[in-house]
Image 1 (cartoon, helix red, strand yellow):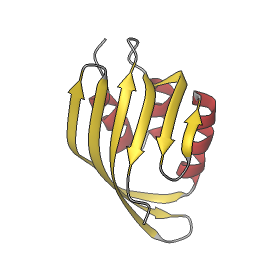
Image 2: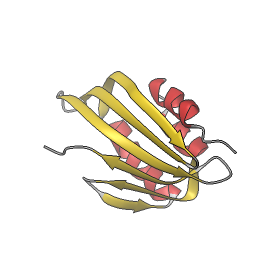
Image 3: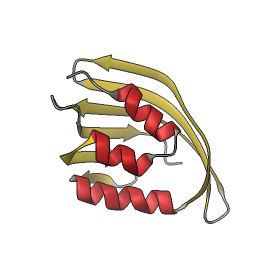
Length: 116
């Protein structure tokens, strides 16, 4: 099965982050972020991601500037802007590298961004 990165990005652009997690991530997925380290398993990642979604008052922008696929690996660069429930504006630029299984699910995803 081919990597479904463009479908995943459409879910995110549409604000369907939790739906994307359920549709595109394997039960044993591992997500690695500079701020959190490894989060192992879909259930733990759903909980962490719901915490993020709950902290967002308004999504302002999600733009995937570059997307590449090689075999079972996808890479994309994105910019994201939102207003938090704390009233602050947030801006993140990151690169995301994902490995996909033969069922079209992400088994490992790593985020690269500056925490500063």
